Length: 88
Image (cartoon, rainbow, N blue to C red; front, top):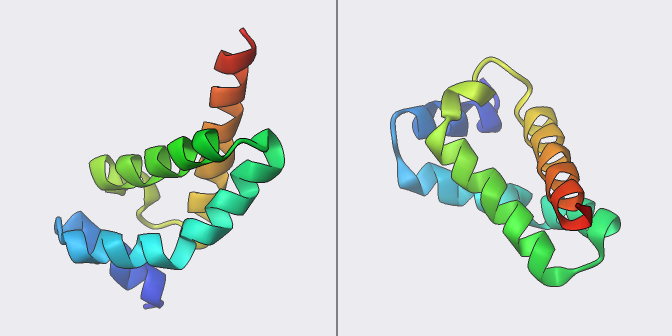
C-alpha cells in the first residue's frame, strides 16, 4: 500500500490525524490548482477547505482510486462549481 492509500484507510477509520497528514501533503498543490483558475486567495482557501471537508465526510468516494489523482480531480470539480456559482 502507498502512503496515500494508508492515509485514506486511516481516514475511513475516522482518524483525524490522517486527514491532517493528507492535508499537509496536498494543501499547496490544491491551492495552486485552484489559484490558477480563480486568482483569488479567499476563494482558493474555500475550495481547498471544501475538498478536505468532503474527504472527511465521504472518504468512501476516494477509496480504491489513485489518491492524488482523485483528490486533484475533485479539487478541479470544486473549483469549476464555485466559478459557475460566482459567475451566475
